[in-house]
Image (tube, rainbow, N blue to C red; front, side):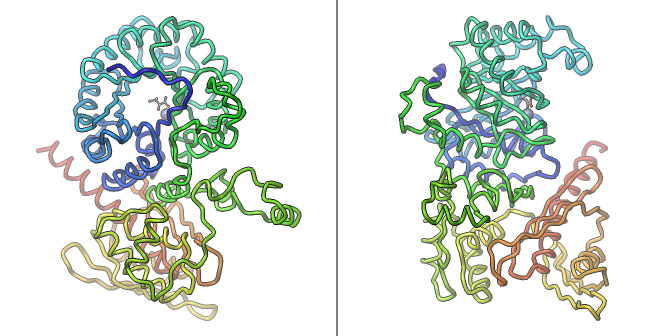
Length: 534
Ligand code: KIV
Ligand code: ZN
């Protein structure tokens, strides 16, 4: 059955697992991708672009697993990316087979600059390829999306022609990418208007938009596009993605939510309609943001709109005074609408497993029995050290305990001596994959440096630490500290995350997590090279 364009609602197409994962260092393993996909389904996204199946065996398997486990009849559409060639398209169709609702997203560049320097093809050749490959994708799957890459820098007359041909060949969604993040809101709105007016069969397809944030305009561009007929927004959690990232899902959704009355008429609704413009459960936004940040190692800046730590904090006296008298004086949305709670004491050290599970469920966190057991043990450990366990602490504990880092090297213990009269010294004990336990010690410029040097003496994989960040989960001297690091090995970046009331332990664990990721990837690459050479 052909998908009919919906005109009075905006379709949210999440590409965190495909374009978002293209952020340097945001590489996720298949378990982590599945965890995020499950959360995206809870968030209520309409489409999950789960990966680029032809690009690697790992991506193929991750898309297949998400199609199988998240692509249920009542779940989201699962989409796979494919260049406009038969091998890519076939791989996408194969990976998507288990999904109740699958979508092939195929693309080819259409701007003259890409045609001349990258594809080395004429406009006529690209037009033919687009038609043939959309028709091929259609022969394998009913739901087909077509993207003319670098659409914003494409000659509009040629763009109209390609879009008309793609729709005639079976595309049910046509996506307009601002691949290089170049356009401005008025220009992008005019481009969408031009498409609506000049592509004769445009009523047979949903108009989608995709854009990068190089000039910080992606969200504004998309909102203008909605006013002119775009009905699908391609975005990522926390706006992660290539270079400056993609349009941020939480900003788009909350703009459409908070400013419903402004947008309603553009979607043919009465101004004061209270029906949501998207299918997103906004109370899942904060949790999804935290999950993506901890699994990708991409830290959310404190002043980031909607999900930054300061987004709902009022610092100035005048603002605090106003908010205390009436929240609406300085607040345009309620922190609870994105799932933030101000519950301070949730559980104590005497709380049992059932209370722990119930509170997690109240927070919308559902864990497998195994993950629940691990998280509960950790909760007990933290509750021994910290008087008040807040919802944010619980999220940090769960993110830390349930992340799916390969356990190759296990940190057994870490000890440091430091202070203004002592040379920082660290001793670590690490269990190697063969079960052997190795201890070593090192001195450093500070305690973390000493710990990392001691770890390097045991795990000898040369790498460059390119980012180290410590954030406190809540206020208070006994707060849990979250450490996120990124390190570089050859051309790849690997991230590590850990949370602990002791930031030295969190630093050591985050480093081991990143090294485990690096080691697993290195082993896979070496195995692949051996297969190729033998
Ligand atoms: O930015 C881009 O143009 C893309 C396409 C593959 C849609 O990511
Ligand atoms: Zn992109």
